[in-house]
Amino acid sequence: MIIYTSQDRTSICSRGMKLAIALLVLSVMYKPLCVRAQAIPSIEKSDGHLHLLVDGKPFFVLGAQVHNSSGWPAALDQAWPVLAAMRCNTVSVPVYWEAIEPRQGSFDFSTIDAIVLGARAHNLHVVLSWFGTWKNGAMTYVPAWIKENPKKYPPVVDSAQHPVEALSPLGEASREADRKAFAALMTHLKSIDGAQHTVILVQVENEAGVLGSDRDYSPQGNARFHEQVPSEVLASLGRTNEHGTWPEVFAERAPEAFMSYWTARYIDSVAEAGKSAYPLPMYVNVWPREQPGLLRPGFSSPSGGAVAWLLPMWKRLATHLDVICPDIYDEDEDSYQNLLALYSRPDNPLYVPETGGSIAHAKNMFLTFASQNAIGISIFGVDGHMSAQNLESFKGWGSEVAMNFALFGPASEAFRSLSDAGHLKVAVEEEGLANPGLSFDQFDVAVRFGPVLNGYGGPRGRGNPQRNGRVLVGQISPDEFLIGGMNANLIFAPKLGSALTHAMLVTVEEGYFEAGVWHTERLLNGDETAFGVTLKPHGSLLKVKVRAY
Ligand code: DGJ
Image 1 (tube, rainbow, N blue to C red):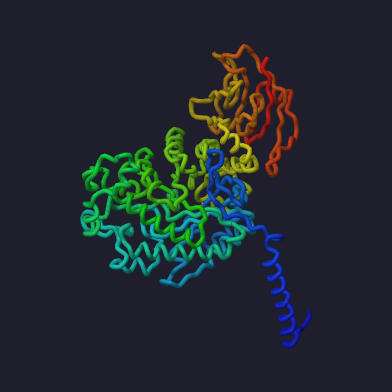
Image 2: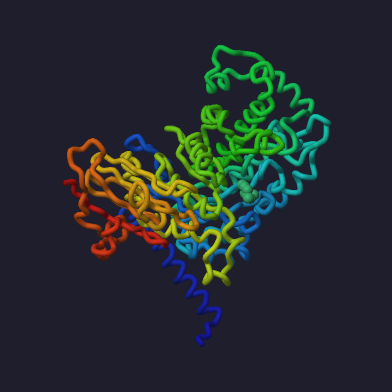
């Protein structure tokens, strides 16, 4: 052990400090030469398609969100190994208003620091979810000094004049307080991550709106409800020829339209405050009401969120939000596909901030992978289902999503550019649908799920026992395809109408992508291709060249 006297320490310190100052001066003088600061994450349009850019390159979020109470260092320590097993590239973590501003104006960012440093140590990007005024249509995450002062921070009041456990979007003091807290968070984030870009996206609030009433029936709420609907609302919804109060224009849908308008203005203002400090891309997640059985705004789902029929209004009013996106827990393929279509617009990238971990969710995830303008998807609640102790037996919930991430992650750049070019198609197995067809410029592809057996109509897939087949087929050129997926078998035929009748497999390469470059591991042939091109249960990535004759 070396023991220093206090004099030694002073001189070591001052020598150290001199060196540090010299390095700092040098780094400032020569910054353009040695550190090329990358642009902060952003959402950009190129060649007509929207992309999330991280350090200047398109990035597809393969995310996993931890549980609501897991944004704390101790809980995160349990989550890191699970996230590694999920094979995600991004972790989505909540940030709690009550934790960062326990006393008004006094901030504690230790949880943020732990999230960012932990993610860096585990080679992950971060999506931060701001649990501020709203969390699932309630005010559960606002600090105690707000909960305990309803006079200053008014809640929604229901039609029986009872307060509901949700702040009113009409409350100016609430909005100002949220703006200040969120701006302080973004200022801190810039100071710790402005150069490194570990955090790439920020969610503003969580499933906003109110549960427990369809609108605010307070005196202020009633007065506002009987004001004229602003012309920009009418214009955004294509109703320029109409005018009148909210109930006059929207009848039984008025409470929801009214709440949604004020919530959009409130959240946009919070996002604006955050962006003035550090302009990362920001989004809101929506509890969509399009799901079957969830039909009553304010009771079965929050009243005031960006539900699909009001999406055009949000896009027009909430200009500080880059993305408005649905949490999709639907297992049914048609309703999943419907939500993707509703929220994908030329001005709204497609992001699924929350989905589940069942086999059906893993299959539906392939629909997101293939969608135009998609920037990512995230599975919710991974740390509840698995723990560092049971990773070995990681087979059930979430495991098929992890297989998706492992397969799609390194190949995402290739698949996404095929999607941008309009050359990517997807097939997922459904009960009673084991033989979907895909059509390309010169070839038709029959996808067979499950054992291929002869019967009426020739050899056909009989379905996988777990109905977990899924496949992406991208046309690289008219006779070359990139194929990724699980539990499927594919055969090619010259496109219907062609003069040729047969298709020959020229080469079937099995391989992987590394840093965007394709590497062939082996050529498949013989028994491995004689009965079609087979995709293994844990996933296969293939490059296939075909020839019609
Ligand atoms: C949707 C919410 O956004 C999440 O925070 C979480 O509460 C899940 N629902 C629970 O399933």
